[in-house]
Length: 221
Image: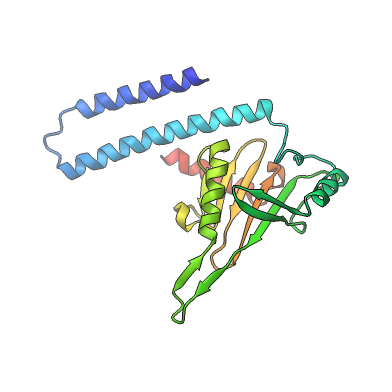
């Protein structure tokens, strides 16, 4: 798989070198710079898609559903309750202390874990003219994104409050979308509460809509 990935990179770089060698005396430096940036975006998108496929294929073959050492998707509720009691309903991920969000857990009709949900409160302080002074959530989000990115690559989708695509710094929802699991970091502006949810894909509400939007966007790139 790594060899195929390297071959793809070599082919893309070779194609780019051919494009860059074509005469373009009639174009301005600004136009040339725009073309170069567009070419690099194509390369980055191709590599990202290849990396996503590699991770997804690996998860399909090897993923046992484990979310922590003792918690996994599909575990029986009785076993889950025992683990939750042992850790007193709290775990730490990437330096962020997160509480079990029992109201958002989903055990389905088979009484097995299909949605694992965590949450934490954070402080936001405002001055007299409502200018933001301290917002802990950004540090939490940065730590969690770095943690999940090391395991699952860059986020597949970052969405605003309307669930439309946006830059990560403006995102309410940050998503990793794989065949065996969907990971969602939710950080609504002003809510003073951040959540991390890991879904069995069949239990992700609105998942088909998000996946279709992502597919449509990739088709245009």
